Image (tube, rainbow, N blue to C red; front, top):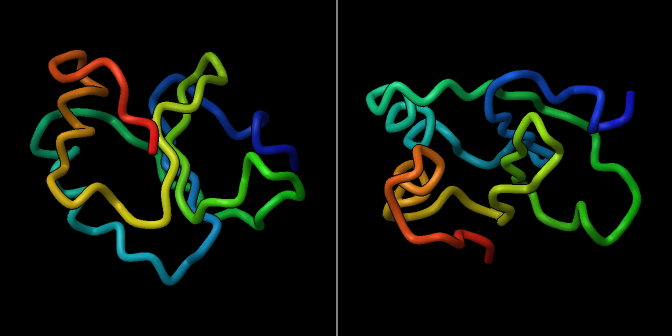
Length: 89
């Protein structure tokens, strides 16, 4: 299934490496009342999917990509519209 077909109405954390610990991020997003759907998926071919984690929006925009969850979890505020404009790494 194409990755874009997985996107729903909320943010989606797409995890291409199942070994990455995402618990802290999910707890923080729940506390912030930020709905995030998690999908563990097989990594598609292509340079855009070289990172282990990707946060996508319903409109097919990539909100963040990286190999770990953000250490300070400031990305939660950005996703909620309360932080710096860019969170890309």
